[in-house]
Image (cartoon, rainbow, N blue to C red; front, side, top):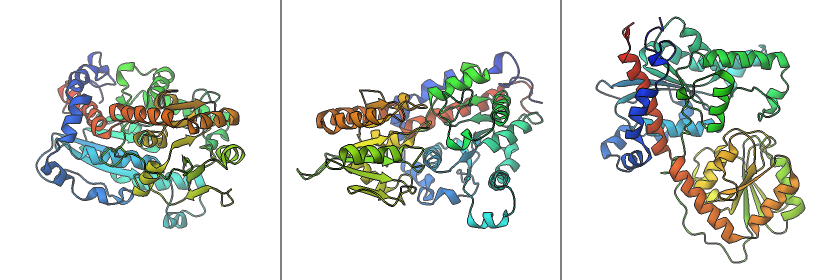
Length: 444
């Protein structure tokens, strides 16, 4: 069974730390940057035109067309809303590693019109679970062919962990922005979670701990998530590797000097699909009260209200890595994201990549992304006065905005570059595969 030499059993191989520590120096930040920047024409041709295709409709497939790859990795990943950015960035840079054959299974919790029609009459929660199962089923059928499978989907983790009691292969990696909800008071609980009765939250925490006991390695998006996994699920620290996939800096290019009319008003930017949860309603009130005559506010959200004050502009149809979105960041002066409940918001990273200072809140891993007084300002969630003061401070000081913006870009290039971080993630997965092969009974 799972027995000898795996991360789950055996003294030596309880964690992949020995092999991972030996591998990671070779894919450190400097080396990975050189490798990514000198990617050969053959590598880029190998990537092909897939990056031009909507990944929401990508079938499960291998990215290695010929030859026998050294590793076979599966990816079953949530692509709902902001998670699509992670999927696209991970896939783009993973396909450049010719040692690896990757099979991709994107899963979206938003049901298609056809699925809603077919599942009409079922309880909504059950209908969504069946829709998710339908999307991930092809990946579940091919698990035995993979060396390692990365999971960012609750339903897939449950299925794979249950299967791991019977089958040793593949090794399982959990990589998500979430963490177990141990304390709903301190955790940034989303609105749909708040309505659940206590017994359901307790059962979910039990499931999270059960899953954690069978997962071989965790690659959370943040140190914040990693600490919760370690503390709440008793996972050894050596099995936790906090690495954010990062931004595609071939797309999010450092902007040139802004060219604005001398009398142009400064532009505030808000980006958030879930308008209310991200604090859009609070920002509108603060803007209308304090800044309606001295600034513009641009809102990127399909959920923004229709009745808006003057100098507020709404953009409802932008997609991840959209050229129009990048241009909007480039024309803005600061990002304001007064979110009430969040984990690791992509908008914060995108703003820093485009040299914008960020005003946001101290929830989830945001203080880990935005360094207060260095790359932006952190305020308490829901505090309108503190939010107004932080915005006013930045609007009144162009030099402070410029300095914070530059430091934010430097932070992205050092810590959140997908060309650097994806090879680091793949190195962890490779070391898991190698440790399995080296273990006694590897062929069983």
